[in-house]
Image 1 (cartoon, rainbow, N blue to C red):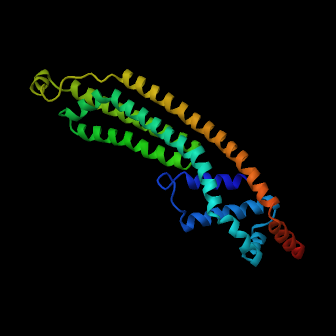
Image 2 (image 1 turned 90 degrees about the vertical axis):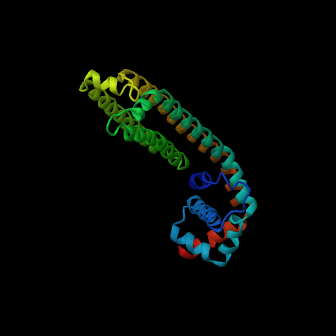
Image 3 (image 1 turned 180 degrees about the vertical axis):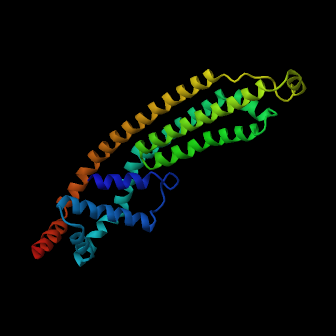
Length: 260
């Protein structure tokens, strides 16, 4: 049953905007494939034999079960409630923490953007883009239900962002150290003297990394819990389907008797 649940989890996570829409043909085919994968796993039948059963006349009649709109919506409603709602909530929390980091770094960013330093404006723009890109990466791995990939990606992004902030800070400090006082006073209106505090950058980045890491771990735990819960709810349906459908048992047993 796990193969069916995993396929449904990955498929329905991306259906936020079509809760009550009739499934597209390729969506129905995915449910059909999941159904036949489940039949093969449950009966320990090879994919080749399952394919022959599926293409046989009884198999085509049997496939009507897996194309039932009611059954599809039953799976959809369960998965939507259990997965999509809390993944959306996780994504909103991730975005909130990224926006919170941007808020703490705003003074530093404004000094970069408002300075007379060569490339300083570009540096600030790159840092802002990098923080916004983190939201895109997070969205991708959350929708893929891949907590390990999310952790690896986001930790790498945080380290890169930390390093780039350090480089920008050093660039500002080196500029100030090499400019005479009259140069500073001349540009005072445009670039107020500012001592970049690396300790504050470390403090905010370490706090941000700790919060994000905790959220990723919670995401992984919630995914495991939800998968187990869906397995628990769906397994009886799968067993009931096979137990109450003599056609399934008859088709499989007849086909296997011919083969062996």
